[in-house]
Each structure stands twice: as structure tokens, then as C-alpha cells.
Image (spheres, rainbow over the protein chains, first blue to last red):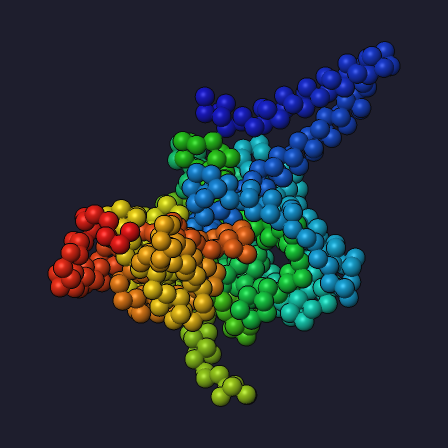
Length: 412
Length: 185
């Protein structure tokens, strides 16, 4: 019974592929008088599989995007003691449909002196990496869309493409706020890319593979519960997870790292000049990027699809991702936006050294013997002490620097 | 400790988030078309005509003081005439107020010696015709003394007391709200 639900989507996919191949065979029988050759059948099956995976990912995550916008508005509203959207559908659940229709019917304005081609391409370029990033995540048991040996690197490499899109948007709009937002976006995202990747390095060190499937497999444990192997329980894993969450927040331009948008400073940053569906695409790219980052965080640190066998594996993956998205919304409802120099200082002076210390602690963990329970406990404590010490040193450094009075040239 | 303030902030927002589901006092939003806040007693919008008992028994005697005093001149009154004798009777035949011109100054209500015109509290008055769409005639303006008591209770009590006193002095005057038509109709 459990296996049936666990593999429901896989079984469904296999059945559909078989159906398409069988249909192809009968069509070719009618047309050519014989069934497809083995090579042709294989190609048809592979093609169908690709189409199915794409359609499923786009469909599921586009719906998740809609629900995430609703969830975000609801949660922020409750944090501020409001109701939030509650008019369209039960609890306002269909608000995103109404928003989508509104976006589709709005006028698409292109500034007269904009670089039309770049301005037109930017939203699509923003959305493409956000969607591609899902291709590297194993959503459940036997449910990895691709199984690359370099999936983690590929994920970050594809994810970095969104910077280009933001810069294209800012540059193509020919608007001073746009270009300011774009420059901020590029500066921020390149700065936070480094701690983001360095936060993922310990996992790769321990697993010895860049493949997301193998990283998830390494976090599995026997038995019903299946939670003991998650990397987040180890000191370096926890530190890495925290670093990853912070850097992922910055990578997806979310509060408190939303200075590229900065409504109160530069209107809306790189997407000032976008309206209608192009704006919706940027919005979608931001949310899909956020969800993909949450998915990678789940894969790297929260055991991927592993979890107590009460729910199917894919449900565990989605649930964990949902919790990370909730955390990001909670953070947005709590923290104010950082100043640009604070943001940069935090990336280079706090996150980077701490990530490097964390890699060192991981190396220590890797070489400590962990055959008996006692040895494991000792290894855990030593690594934890290293991580805490690193945190203390970095925080002293950051606090001291942050305490220096800032001199304003014109304002004071 | 570094990061302590951040955690404190998160706790504050989490508390707000959770308590908003259990403590209805926190949600101050009024869901307007379904829920309404009772307007304060002293709030006012546009003038209306008070009648006692039946709509025919209105207090207005068509003295036209309000029409003359009205700064934006939004009031138009014609006196009713006796069909047989042609003499004017103390009663308006036409009483129009154009709400699109009225500036809600309450001067008409203050100058009226008969306490016949008072300020209403209606606010859902949107219309589609800007020329004459807001023109309210006598039948639209007439509202009962009970309604006046509902919206401005304190002021209405004072007015009632004042009116019944002055009517005691006048022999043959009718009691408030319940009496028959005035003799001059």
C-alpha cells in the first residue's frame, strides 16, 4: 500500500509512456504496415518522458507559485493582524487566478527609448533558469527528472543565469531606477553566490558526489522513521543549512535582501518599466527561484525525500519545501531591508569566513573515527565546538565593525 | 549574542501570527459591505426633512429661510397654495435639495426655526447621472422623527423637549409625533 502511493506518480508516468509507444506502434502499423523499430520506440519513449516531466514540473510548480503568492499574502497579513485576501473563493484561495487574469489583460508598456529586444527577452530569460533548476532535484524515490553526476554544480550554474536576466531588465528599460536596481542585483547575487556554494560544499565533501540523487541516498536511514541520516542534525550540516538559507534568501531577492527591488528607495528596481504579463513573469521567476532554492536546501540538508513512512516520499519533499517557503515568508514579515553596505559587509565579512570555517569543521568531522556510538558523540561534540567557536569569532568581528558610527557626508 | 535580536523579532511576528487566529480583538479590519461601524452621533452628511407621525405631517412651513441662507444655494422651495382661494398655505409644494451641490455645512439645520430640516448620516449615494442624479425631491428627503432619534439621539431629545415646550404655549397646537394634521392644511 505504501509503495503504491510512494510510486504512484512514477507508475502513472510509465503507464503513459507505454501508452504513447503502443499508440505509435499502431499508427506505424496502419501507415507503414509494421511496428516501429527498437531505436524508434526508444526515442518515442524518451521523448514522451521528457515532455511528461516538463509538463508535470511546469504544471505543479506554476500552481505552487500561485498558491505561494496567496500563502505569502495571507501569512504577512496575519503577522500584521489583518485578514489578507478573502474575497475570491474560499479563504481567498483563488486570488492568484484573479491576479493572473488581471496581469494578462493589462497593457504591455515598453518605454519609448528602451532597448526593445533586451527589454522583451529579459522576463523569459529570468523565468528559464528558475524552471530549469527544478530539473536537478529528486522529488521522491525514483523521481529525479535528471540524474547528472554534476547536478549541484549545474543547479548553481543555471541559477546564476537569473542575474543576467535582471541586468538585462535593468539595462533594457533605460530607466535610472531600473539600472540602479540591476546593478544592486548583480552585486548582491554575485556576492551571495559564493557563500551559497560554500555552504553546499560540506555536503559534497561528505557524500563525495555532486549528484543530488546520491546526496539524498547518503542521507537515508533504515527503518520506519528515516530521519537520523539528515545532514541538518550534524553540526556542520546545521551551520551549512543556516548559511544556505541566508544565502538562498539573498539569491532569490527576498526580504531582508530585497534591495534590488527596494520599493521605498528605487521604486521597484529592475522591473519598474515592466507591466502586465512581463511583470508577472518576473514575479513568477522570483517565486519559482525561491521554491527551487528551498528544494535544493531540502535535498542537501533536510534528507531530500526521506522521512517517516507515514507520507509518500514526494509528499515529504513537498512538505519540507513548503516549510522552508513558510520560513522565508516569516522572515519577510519580520525583518526590514538591509542597507547596501551592510549587505555586502555581511556577505564578505561574516558569511564567507564562517562558510570557510564550516568547511574546515567538516574536514575534521570527515577524518574523526565514527565507528562506535561514543566515537560518533565525541566527533559530534568536537565539530560542534569548532562551529560554535567559528560563529563566536565571526560574530565578534562583525559586531565590532557594525558598531562603528557611520558618517553621512550630506545628511548630518 | 550575535543574532539574538533577530530571533526576538521572529518571536514577535510569530506571536502576532498565531494570536491573530485566537484573539478576534487583534483583527481591527471591518469587512465593510457585510459589517459596518455605527457612525458617531455627531457625524453628518446631507440635510433631510423631519416629519412627525405621517409623512404628510412635516414640520416645514416653507418659510424659505434655509433656501436663502444656503451658501451653495442647493435648496429650492415652492410654497403650496390653496387650490380654491389661491392663498399660500404653510407647507412646501416643492422642496428640492441637490446633494451634488450641497457642501454639508449644516447652516440650513441651524437657521430653521421649526426644527424641520436636520442632517442625515447616509453615505452610500453613488449615482450614474451627474446632472440631476443627486437631486432629491421632497418625498426622498422626508424622514421620520423616529429615524432622527436613531441617528442623533441626544440632539433629537433636545429638539423634542424644545418643541413640546413651545407648543404648550401655543393654544391649539398638536402634540409631537402622534397628533393629527396641522389645522392649516
